[in-house]
Image 1 (tube, rainbow, N blue to C red):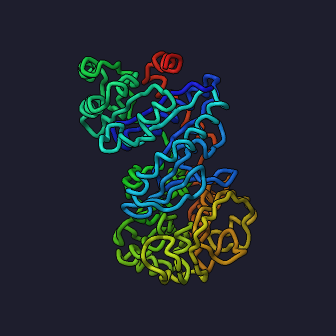
Image 2: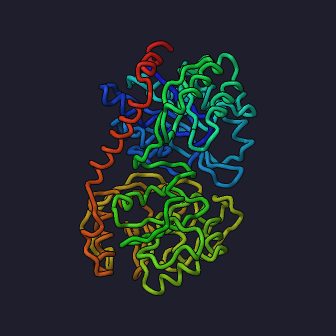
Length: 486
């Protein structure tokens, strides 16, 4: 069976996901076959595997860092929020149903056998399992039925690194407070404390680290810098949403829907120095972009209502009427059609029928069974800025409850408005470049001005930079002792 190590955090967004990805890359570089594992993940950014199963993107990124294929066993339970108090529950890649918080907390311990089966089967195939916790292990109101932090650590007998975020302030209180709220057996599992997202002179930090060790009776395993690696994340706290709003040679605007999902669909456009990718939540932020994207969403009906009530629908319709290209992905594609029907209340929004933006001719009907599959093909029949895509291959995945017309093309187009159900459409070689080239031609701008580069090589370089930071920031001898002496 594989050795294991677990990364827990003092809070959400403390940096657990990236540290796990970095460890996966380090172990790969050391010649070990590593696999990520997160027993329960809550996220709207998901991925469809080759077998048609759905899993969180954080474990997909970690698998990529480890050089292995994503597998639903790496994330056996995925929760996709549908309301403020409820989620769609996905177990081993398949929808189990919608549950409110109380119902799920009553049910989740029943998932332990399936979680353990997924873990054991991975452990039989790999050398090391890098386990990620969720939120904080010190949520004392939730500890009794924990299946993702110390509860899981006990089930799989995992040593733990506890990570705190110094960039938000109060890292010593975070780490000490978390340790203090744990039971003795749980504290004994923590073999090292990690200060993450540090900027400055470590010498100034050293006295505090020594006091922290004295207080917690646990060694500081390392201090990791605030990293500037360009690696996809899935958290709703994504820094993408808070980046600068300056407009560059080619300006792309993504509508920041309240329940936005799979926003990593647009990551390929971030690989160009002179392309701005802005996330827009208010009408006055839209301005005059070269293309508007309507992204995926976990609740098409609720987010379409928000779009209408916020005033963004009106400015998008105005922009489209003036010739601005508009492109919808999945839920965004559904919104662009004439009508959305939800006769069985699949989306739990309480609305059975709603007019769409009417920019495309399709209608959407929600059904109880989720369509989830990888897909591939070749673009054809496109015009305008998308004409350069014709003849290029695409590959991606579909994941949606709504159904449109059978036999619809990969990209449906009507004038300057387009839509597709395919996530990852712009990831295939040459696709993002062809679209940007078309937008450049429309502006009389040379494509070379955007300054592109080899995306695949760039991504690998980012993982290597992450691994280098982990090696330099962590006491790797301690990490390896943790693997050997659990």
